[in-house]
Length: 228
Image 1 (cartoon, helix red, strand yellow):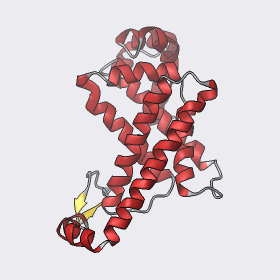
Image 2 (cartoon, rainbow, N blue to C red):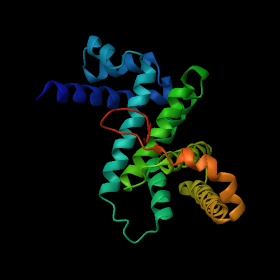
Image 3 (tube, helix red, strand yellow):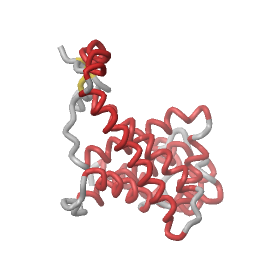
């Protein structure tokens, strides 16, 4: 076993051992200590893998959910679905792969002012993973607008889902459908505005700049760039 694999194995063991403690102690240092004791991983390694304690555990849980979603989407036949249905199905599947009470504890943690930026980045990351898994080919400003829009839809749906007591979360899926419909209506309005002569005139200058914006170059690790 390589060192990288051994580290990932240790992280997975600690995270799995933490989950039963989260509903009682939240994503906290107490949960990390209990997880280390239950998993048998040395405390020194645990401190190295999760240096900020509970918040690093919560981040690992969220990212593990994203990874599971990508795997599940790769095994799901969506060829008969329209694109909006694929997006809806992906968001729904993402929530079905996790435990609501554990996510509730994470939501409370990332709602704290000092953690809100990191929480927003995780939501953006989920949106990016969904679009990438659905083979999004946009490389211009649409790369960003798609992810920003889906991040807003996903974040709102999670909050609704956390308070949903309906059978099989039926109210949440209806809420999600309405949010996706709102997005589709906005896209139709945006498209018609772009075809309108007045709209073309008003947007002529900003569009010249927006057309230069390109999607991130993942190989460089940069967040985005301007085309020459």
